[in-house]
Image 1 (cartoon, rainbow, N blue to C red):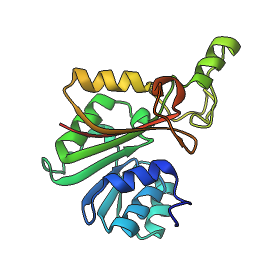
Image 2 (cartoon, helix red, strand yellow):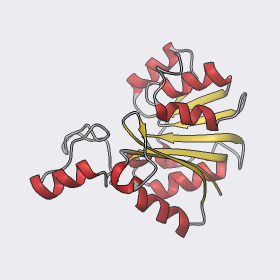
Image 3 (tube, one colour):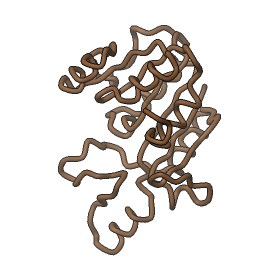
Image 4 (spheres, rainbow, N blue to C red):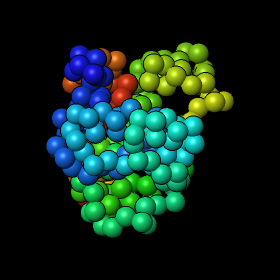
Length: 197
């Protein structure tokens, strides 16, 4: 993949992850990000995924992926045993985000989280004027088939981290293929954070 073909969110994660590091991708889906990190940064990576069909696609890409539920914790991993733990587009889908984040911060020296911003102005517009659950580019599912369990905004997440003394080292806010520097809680479709405890 040429860098122009790599989406901005993946480009940011590629920049944040150091060459040859150890990575655990929680809720890795079909392994697209993990595969990219393995090729571009030669990471020693593994994933955890609950969807069996997605695991088959990961294995077909030569990835090491385990079938587990990340809501149950990461007891098989020691404290700070990995350089990075990634929750990209999966944090809002877990049943127990508090438990999952605590475990990710325990296991990883750094944690990368990316999620759709439910306070984006298009979502607000649909809720306010149409009175309906929003469907946008970053929230493409109807209310009855969405995998999302938690509807958080960028501001919600920043406040959550502040209250739990989780240090946000870097952040990136995106709307489509554009970086958002002003009013991210209103204008960004996605927030990505690099954190440590």
